[in-house]
Length: 305
Image (tube, rainbow, N blue to C red):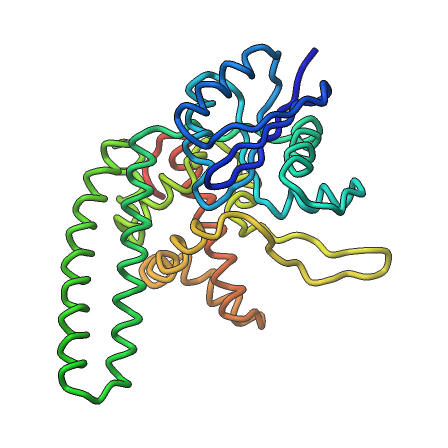
C-alpha cells in the first residue's frame, strides 16, 4: 500500500501525518529528529512527502529526506490552505494541516523538488545576504536626504560605505560559488549581455529546473505566464499569477539591459508599447521571451542567439 506523507513544520517541531493509515506523530525539528523521521518513514512504501515553504525552517528536513531517497515536494502555503478550504476543512491546527498535506500529496500532479545540494544552499545564503546588504544600503542612502545633524550624516555615510565594500566582496564570492555549483550553466548564462553575476547566481539557485522544462512550464514556474480569465461571453484580461518572485526580481533589471542592448528585444518592447500596452506589461512579455530563450539555450547546449 502506497503511503502519502504530510509534514507541518515550525521552528522547533515536525508534525507528521501518514495517509491512508491515518497515523500521526510529532518530532523535534533537529538532526536527531530527522534520523527518527527517516527511520519511521522507512516502514512505509512512501509515494511522496509534501511540505510547505516556511521561511527556511523546512530546508534541513527536506535535504535529509532527499538524502534518504524520499520523493519530496515543497509547495506555497497558500496552495495547501486553498486545498483545505476546498475540502471543507476550515479549522486550522498543526495535526490538521499535516493531514491536509498528506491528502494533497496523493492528488497533486507535480514533479518533486530538485535535490538541495550543499553548494546550492551555500550560494543561496550568499545571495540572500547580498540582498539584505543592498536593502540596508539603499535604505540608508534615502535616510541621508532627511537627517540634519552632521554627526548622524557622517555615521550613515560610513555605514553606506561599509555596506558597499561588503557587497563588492560578496559579488566576488558569489561568482566563485556559482562556478562551483555548475560552471557550464554559469558560463552560458553570464555570456548573455544583460545577465550579470547576481542574476546568473539567482537563476541557478531559485530556478534550478532551468534547461530541463518546456517553454510553458518554465514561464509558469517563474510566474510570468499569462493566464486566461474567460467565462461564457466574458473575455477578461490575461494576468500573470503565482510563481517564484525571486526569479522575477532577478530577471527584472536584466531584461531592461537586454532591451537596451539587443535589437530584437528593443523592437519587441517598442511594438508592444505602440499597441498601447503599458511599460510593465511590455517588460513582462520580454521577460518571458528572455527566460524561454535562456531555457532553450541551456537545454540544447547552444550559445546565445
